[in-house]
Image (cartoon, rainbow, N blue to C red; front, side, top):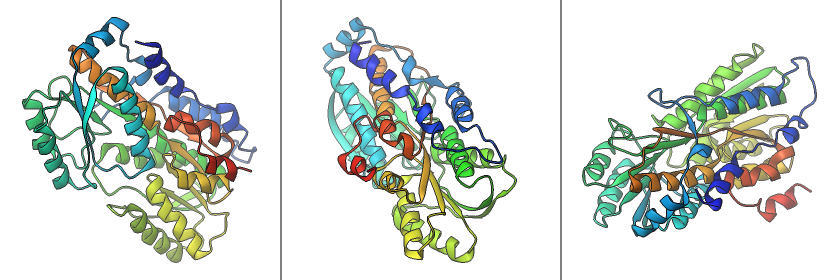
Length: 376
């Protein structure tokens, strides 16, 4: 693997644990957040079919292999479920960096607007361009499966992120599946919630109303971790289906705050729905004692955190590193090199105290000026 290749993945695996531990003061529960989060990071959950998790940092391409890949003058298409989020932008930036380093030309990038029927059309359009590689996340597992299978049958190598299409097998129908440890991310968000609530409260959950493996794992992880705190009660739960995730989440959160006047915690499945939760809390004039945690690390929720607002922490993905790993796996496919079926990046715990340091670990670049200024 080139110096750039190894550094790009390895550098994204560090966690600012010291800064995180400084975020909290001891309480009656004496929760050792740093230790528990370290254990979560070191033991990522298995894949959707029980596949052993292999860390992205373990992927290797030797210099001579990189030269072989470059000589192929290969092409790739990026077929996304949607591209509007900060997560998607960071993911695609990581893909582009790795593909550029391997001399693989991106010939198409599509956005299905989170609609399966549009993604099927996108796959068919991309196939006409005859790319060597497709990197993609299915908008829906079953409804898109036939299109992905058709692409695979045509000889196109597929690298999936977050979930694979239904009925497809790694090593046979696709190269590999790359994901964050989403269950771990949910657990981290729950631990940060429990700590901020001092182990006591009433909370509402806004999961994703979808069969997407990644987001299902988050709510599973959150519930597993929050169950350790008997004085924290989940009093309401309602899923958000999209495509207007922020608007739908705002309506759900507003209803929860109205129905439960003593509600003092809200968790949403990722940062875009959390933007809706923030809008609902502000519109309701909720006290800043209301604790919001989530997964992922977008600009808007980070701004609220930086300003000591409602968002107290997040169990973030590392989307830039995930995208980079997907690009490296495209190289594996072109070489015919055996790839691990399930590649994982560990959860990243982020609070206000390690926000600026954590930003590049998640998103691959330095924190934007607007975020840095908000910390002052």
